[in-house]
Image 1 (cartoon, rainbow, N blue to C red):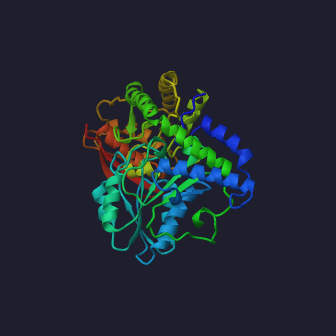
Image 2: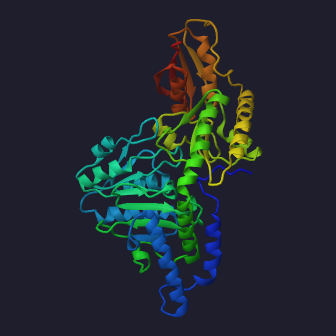
Image 3: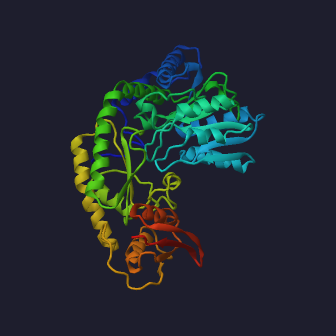
Length: 462
């Protein structure tokens, strides 16, 4: 069964499995102890730290192991804000950061701090100039991911780091998605990553804090990991994480080129095989293994189930899934279609035959769902309008993609220049109706509150 969700968690790398099994016998003792077993455990921990630091591009004494990538992000943000509290309480983040960063920002704001979110373009990329403009004299910390976890867009970290250094502001980089493919460029100050993203075991995170960065670990003091990660180190998992990181980086260049070719094929063929699809994310400055696309008039949860029945494991940023009640914050920030969203992230070793089979299965799955939902025939334009008045579509109480389906059916019942008003209370409509207008070349007039929900107005232009 092809597993196409490596961006969530990569399969355990064979080297990680071997290192984990071997170190279970040697790394169980307390590395802080001076007896033989403790010294053996310390040697394993030190070797893992050196290997991980080499991959990150920092000194071993700048690197700490944490219990997860999320814990690394939280510790990095809170430690930096605390260490620079005399400067101020202002935090800068991009609108498409991982939830671990945005949750930290919300917590900081609730405690009296201030947060500025830097917007992104339709490809999901921040402007270095806009990021620099967000920095203030009281900015204590700035955060920017190296690459986006949902759409794969690579961020201009080096340019933003340069602006931060000029302003005297440390930059924290969430490198969870990119570290397997190479070190993060630029003069960053703090870096966080997670082992299960590159094929290491879950439960190991990396936190690198450059020398000279003001940093005050939060919580009760602990003598382990420079005081930045409390508790007994999971040495077998740490050894496996470092060994697998070194292994994937050794073959990263060749594997990246191979997977990029497969992703290029998906990007090109999806729009040919499936009508009314929007491929999102930067087409060039992106991770080599990840592609995201959204299908009009499709229920995202149903599509994922259809693909799962066809033995393909993919994920979605769509609001039409049982575990997500609002549209993906990444897709919302980009202003792109969220309904029927599919994220394909290929693990190392994915074959061309698996990708070909996915492309064979996808069109039928999408067509079947659209038929069941009563979606309009793809790319069809209804004939002459029935009347010159505006048309109101009542989709209150109906979830995506129904409001957009009803809009697509109604647009042909008004003349060119006429308006369709869609009444909806589904949060996804706020994103998907403007995105539909962008795809269809229709004019999105705007929205206003209405009884029971929101009224979205669309003018027919052709």
